[in-house]
Image (cartoon, rainbow, N blue to C red; front, side, top):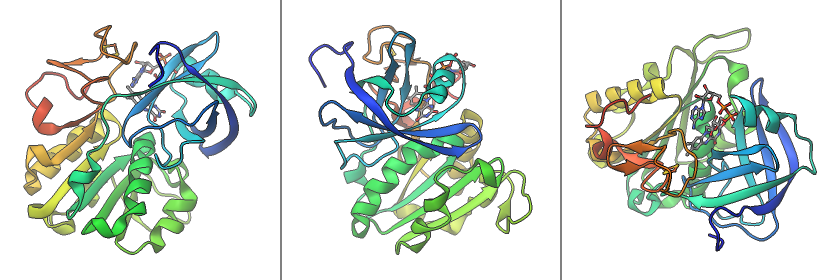
Length: 273
Ligand SMILES: Cc1cc2nc3c(=O)[nH]c(=O)nc-3n(C[C@H](O)[C@H](O)[C@H](O)COP(=O)(O)OP(=O)(O)OC[C@H]3O[C@@H](n4cnc5c(N)ncnc54)[C@H](O)[C@@H]3O)c2cc1C
Ligand code: FES
């Protein structure tokens, strides 16, 4: 963290990757190496326009550049989608608490994701892949609206499929022409025997409605609430526990999260909104 938490570190967009009709990944090179833990987030500033929180989608082991995957949602994300390479930006952070990867060692890791929720998951997966032998199995169940809406297609349909110890199943809400996989929302591919629940942790990230129903299904399958990790994307402003925009009960999502266990937040109202 740099000295003044409101002062962004200057950086430059060096590459832009079209991931899906509404999502782009931006490779951002900071003025100096930038360290983060997987699951932590940053505030990305577009000078003179504003900033918004995003979770880096790249591996934390690479500090000289960072990838951020951004869905066009409103004003700042819309302006970011119009940027070209060479665009100066700012990075504040890293903020919050990420995934407790060391606690996952020796366990089966069950990752459920959808839409742009694959952004933090990609960072986590790259971290797990770096030390894949430390985990009993890594099982991924990912969904998208249609085949075109999947992000990270070269990895999902190619390189990640080749990794031993990594088991990936994809589903789409609506199929088209060449799709031969499952059709249905992501909960339709969550099966009780996908993992050995007595020695597994689950990680869920995606749109709130997907997170809600995936969590309910995992609980129904027998997952303990303290073994389900959720990445909570509450509306945020300061990102450092000052403004109170991001409260979940007694927690600041920006400081105490964004990664929480379901046990921590299950009793608070409106957690899925
Ligand atoms: C910790 C964290 C990590 C995130 N990581 C990513 C990421 O990796 N990639 C990504 O594409 N998005 C991510 N988001 C969501 C992203 O921050 C919002 O899409 C962005 O702030 C919208 O800004 P805007 O100015 O474009 O939209 P606005 O013009 O402010 O709003 C447009 C619409 O987006 C909604 N919105 C605003 N802020 C959020 C929010 N925080 N979450 C959900 N909806 C919101 C508004 O309610 C409104 O409906 C993350 C959010 C948080 C809190
Ligand atoms: S975003 Fe300001 S307190 Fe969390």
